[in-house]
Image 1 (cartoon, rainbow, N blue to C red):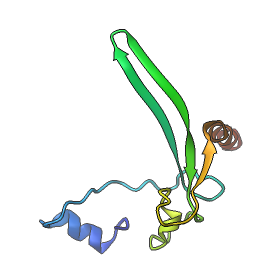
Image 2: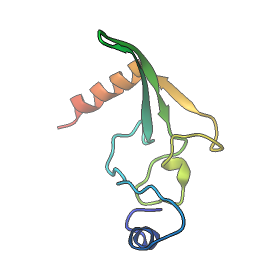
Image 3: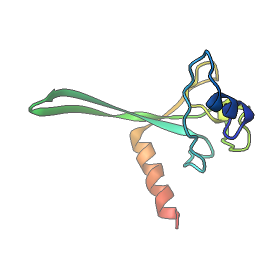
Length: 108
């Protein structure tokens, strides 16, 4: 359901028989070469006393299409879950850190 859409208003203000999850859509977000991405990191708490945590850097998943906040009909630009959308593009956590540092060094 697109932000500010009539359907969102309908779901938010009526009692429906279906369950919905409504969340705020983050706009003006950091992209990976014009594509949305997410970061997957893994933590395992083996013990809380004493605290023992195992950690793996994980990876980044990059969307299949160029991201546009103006077109919510093209799901390939808004999703990084590649089920049925094409080949999954992944990169290492180190590449994510590198891009993040480059972005913030170049931003005012």
